[in-house]
Length: 457
Image (cartoon, rainbow, N blue to C red; front, side):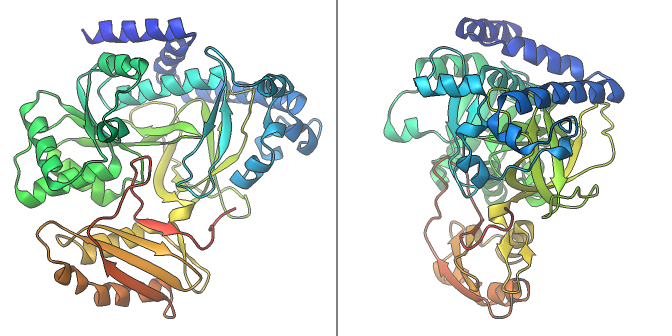
């Protein structure tokens, strides 16, 4: 039955004009390649892309010296602000002509704008080549997490259709049916909803969960806190935010399964996913570099800026695109045998990094542990620390169900005391207790926000 669902899905994609099936089959083949064969393939793909970029794209024609395009380091780093200021210059000559005619019809290029939760909203062009690779990547990530397309699963995801009482498009409903998913709304996470979601998971024979990282974590915490029986799952795929070790551990403990981290963004598409050995593999159609603030390569294990090069998308080639995330690369290959590079860890988005009053960076991972685990465990459901200015910070605390606001308020002084050595002794930290802290418009939740400065270009 699962094979029939997959076959029908790919038939629908072909009818739309997509070659996602061929891209997916190539991914399944590539995971068996020796490392040297894979490296040679990636280099050949880059050489092809680089040659086309310097020939057909004004942005690169002006910035890459003749004869140097064979070297990735010869290309400039593209920040989000530079992307916004050079949008049409980053199009190929043919793409620009097509773009000026107006919106495309059929399965061709699309204009994609990010939601802006990482700071500056960005607009990019995804051509048919990119869309095929990205669709194939999403299917491959399900394969890595142990529930390939068509396997019954629950999807805890943001759905405005439920709230507005409207219907998704016919295409969305057909794909959801073929995917064999049961949708639970991550925009509706009050206690009654959480109990209903857990009851459905417990009664259902579904063994897999696809969820926003924070939504899955909140569901697991609720079950643990209230002693609600949960039938073990086989796997969870968590995405849509930084998955911390504490979040992964809690979900794994409650649902008694492996938790896979999926990493991506709207503008950059699918980037990486955990295999069953726990390694976060970079997807084959990408080259990811980790560099310092000066653009120099970081040694394995050292956190730096994430630069992404898309091996494809020749109509709008993005080479060394700074997606404002922070991560560290791993030098060790994965024991699973796949030849794909591995990220050792993800630290989060640059906008999640605070800047101390002394000018140093403060990792959101530390903040989340200090406030959420050391002080807020069993008392705080959610919190949000916002840097408003060079010395000004606000911290909102949302108490756990059954925890009085006055009880949560007693946490203010000890939290402030432990934050000052990190944020700066002259930091002004205002703490308030609130009924609810909302998600972003896309359903994600931000624990830490920097509204003052961007820690990286």
